[in-house]
Length: 456
Ligand code: NAD
Ligand code: UGA
Image (cartoon, rainbow, N blue to C red; front, top):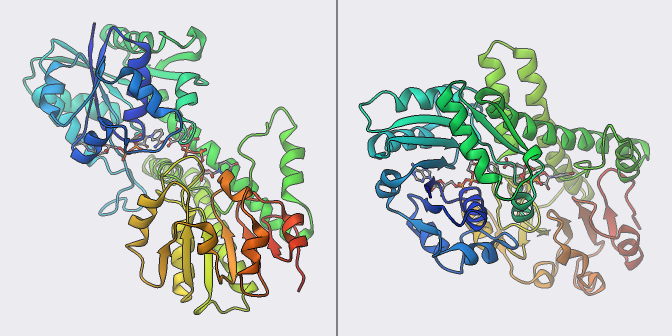
């Protein structure tokens, strides 16, 4: 039996440890965090994150071999294996500001581990997404003091997506474990691989060197985001040429070499990772003297910003270039459906742009109320969250769909239209709704990447 500790009880630490605890009942898992409220909520049925199926998994293991605690020193002292799943945001200050990874939280955990570890051999697992060669820095810190423990650093990046975290963890495409190239390192990597081997077939568990593992994670996110920016860039061309982006996604996705996933045109990708990980990758390329490569990846983020801006400018243009005092309603604020997470959601920059034109902005989201209200509090202007979508759209000049929650397909758009200003506009930032039906009801419909349907 091993004592396994995870530092960081967020979107990654909580769900991954719950799944490991479920499948490895002989080991004890303790998830710790500096945030007391988060830990309290993990210990209750009001979990700090919304993720379908998560509560059921937590309930099965909690109190048996899954524990949540704020006592970080004790959890480190007892641990044979320490997963580190703290946040690694983009640096907001100093050298590399706006691009490089801010590793202060990461380094703090390395120093905590060095101070408190007591077991003779301790495996430290990088679960957070980190720049390539971070394990080297971790190893240096861990070997810098007179610790009781011998450490080995293993890279085991996480590939779950929010909203589908439970199926992603239950049946991952692959699990990546990168170990140091020495005897202890190889044994440490094997130990981590064996944990996953409790429920994942062997050929989906890849053992690599540490650097490949670290870099694969950044590249996986960059490639996924690149597909979205590629299709979004083509959606702009479609709007000029009467081609239809949905038809194009289907046509190219049927080529098995391209595949159908991640070809859904959108107002832009959001979430806490895509933007930050591409910027980190781009910064690394710059750091290693590859400005052309850095610029190539940075362009994925530029296209993403262009897409959100294009969406906004279209609203402005269709509203006769004046939004002052006009009510614009956003359906959805989370960065994708089935999550309450709003981090880096395109809704945030859209709201700011609308407010800069003095629009009156009303926002609805079925699950992300708490997070949305937190984001709106930092914005200046006439903006508010409204709990009922019909009330949110009452008297609106336009509705903009930002997040493709299923609920928005099921609304009574006839009823919404009755109470909207005329001409009534609907901007579908996800191509989620039935455009012909809405047009027949009387809306002027603006999809992404295809011709608008208007009565004007
Ligand atoms: P998060 O912000 O939800 O959680 C991180 C937690 O770490 C926070 O609760 C924070 O309080 C805690 N923390 C920070 N410093 C600490 C310290 N010194 N001691 C103890 N706790 C500390 O972040 P997240 O979304 O879970 O992401 C974590 C990492 O995983 C990031 O590197 C991210 O890129 C990566 N990742 C995230 C996802 C995702 O879907 N969110 C998926 C794959 C990988
Ligand atoms: C993404 C990756 O999919 C995960 O593998 C990775 O582990 C994770 O980032 C991470 O490192 O944090 P996530 O951001 O949770 O997961 O969600 P995605 O499903 O990838 O969606 C990201 C954004 O892209 C969302 O805003 C989504 O709406 C958008 N998107 C996705 C599109 O605009 N079009 C698409 O075709 C697909």
